[in-house]
Length: 236
Image (cartoon, rainbow, N blue to C red; front, side):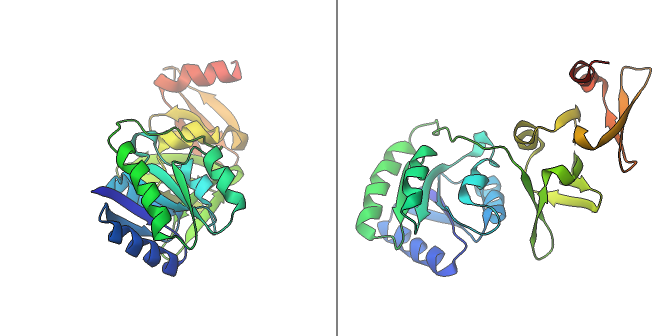
């Protein structure tokens, strides 16, 4: 059985596709997600083989979401769209296939044949990524999209990853690795990334480490391991 998740902001569309996938007897649907953050959670938790991904969703589009997934757990992607103009774009993004809504059972069978071959391969197709300019953060009943220019730093601990702004700290499902690679923020410590556009000064210390004072007055640590990289970057 092919383990799959369905990502679509419309409940009817999710249920309809789930029914069609079940009828093929080829899939175990392990997740039904209404938005990108739910999908990121499901991918980390359930490690699906395939993701049926709606392209146009409020907040974060399907294309934006792809840039937020670690390569090690990236599923095979089948785009699902109601808009023909997105079909060519889907192939530009190296999708295995795309399905136009409303999805037809006969057309889905062609996708099934492709997927049966691909899930046996250990490698996944590479998906081009775009820089992350907004970071999705989880609040109690909503998702907050924080613009990168508003971020002072990002920290991780045993509880997870937190985006720090002048307004407070916000939990995100994204990893430090992804955020470092795709935001341009600088790793200054094993547990910290810093937005140097928001830095005020670098306070040097005797043990080949430092602290960065942000414009807000917040202090961000620089460990010995990352001190040289910071020093070379800024030429001091």
